Length: 110
Image (cartoon, rainbow, N blue to C red; front, top):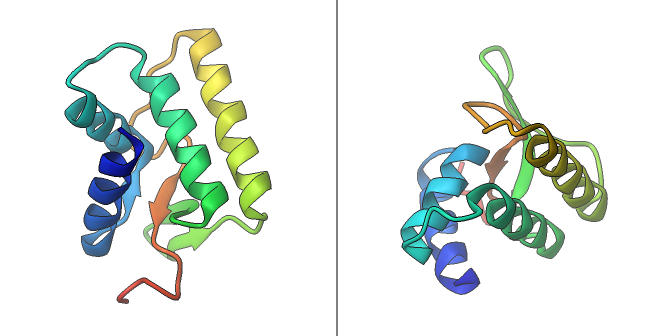
């Protein structure tokens, strides 16, 4: 599942920034299931960030995508913490929640 998800995520990120809830939709597309989407997306995102495949950040109208100023490990832990809080509180992420993703600068075509 992870390789197929990684491929889909990286292809989508070549065209535009990806928000976390979009990743949940990709997990559903790859697995064919809506079970435990938030947890699965959080685990996948943390792994891909740790590996350096994607970069998490924030998105604003004024500045566009701004990568988090933390290491991949710290960023992955932040994603895991935010997802755990959402799971605990029964909150579904919407546009802009948790983070946005971009390709690393050495592979991004911007």
